[in-house]
Image 1: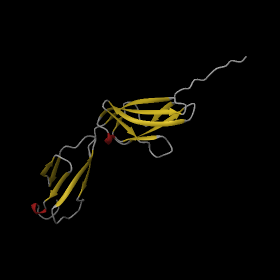
Image 2: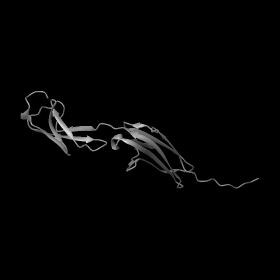
Image 3: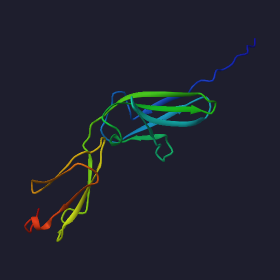
Image 4: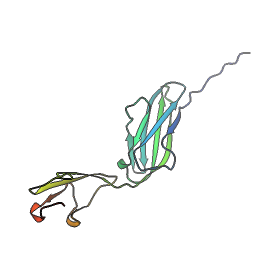
Length: 169
């Protein structure tokens, strides 16, 4: 007995490792995406979405399909990590994983002065931030005394050397 039949073109199967539903993203998190299909995979992408914003993620330059989620690139709150895979036959699938991006303090870099420097003239200092949200206020203090409140970028303060006695500060 013979019977003719046809196998339907099916969307790929996607497994995401490293990111789970409800996970709190509070440090750089790597998502490994494994895709299986009836034919070869033609494209895999990932993005983070919130109601008002979509951010495409860039694949890491490794043999595996991996994407990094850096929480400092996203405002704190509920986001969706979305992985999408497409096969050579046009079949595709998306997997959505709800995550929480934790609120983190900004990373601050200071240029113009380094720990241990000895300064002998007025010295401009620039404060730069890597932050989830826009920095709108910088309070500058020396020896526990407020010196300035900076409210617009670039955040720059000049240390007036004659305003301080010699020695460590």
